[in-house]
Length: 115
Length: 112
Image 1 (cartoon, each protein chain N blue to C red):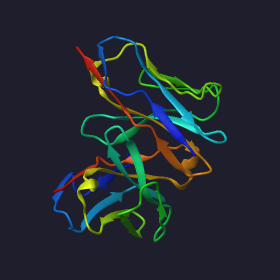
Image 2: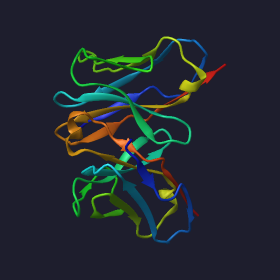
Image 3: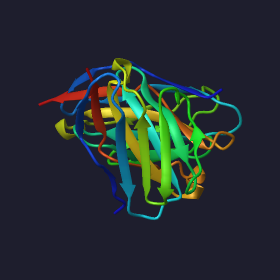
Image 4: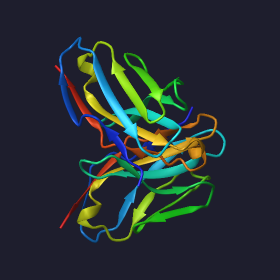
């Protein structure tokens, strides 16, 4: 089975702190994604990557950056956390040709609270 | 642009009741349509999909038919169980964008 592992299930940070969310997948998927999930808003795409060192902005990239130095790992970085970034963050991965299937494999999520 | 609209929840049903969760979409071209499910404390997982008009996706007793004429992909199940309690997300994939667009999610609660 595909496994997508997010490093932290729950984090509490203070405003202004730098926050790293890590995601690792074990199925050699080319594509990786970061979403945030908020009640009533569903999932919104922050960034995605289709290859090592490649990244594309999603719908809501402001306040975030990403890093993909290795194929299996995709990091989401909040340079200076703010309270409006309190949310559930979901990482996902897929094969390059997932465009034909739409099947993404998700991690369990990281719930971030910014005080 | 692409968008997906789902009925707002929560939807509360008794066990063995019939379920419908509405989903409509706006997209250019011919998108593929999906339903994902998120059980408590877990990540999302693909429930079913349909890649062209009039296709019916099905899995675990759930069904949804791709209706191009009404731009809809409603999720149905004839007899829900307590274990179906989860959040359900409708999504579309449009090749032009190379990413999934999700609806807002609908929480289903099934009572024994």
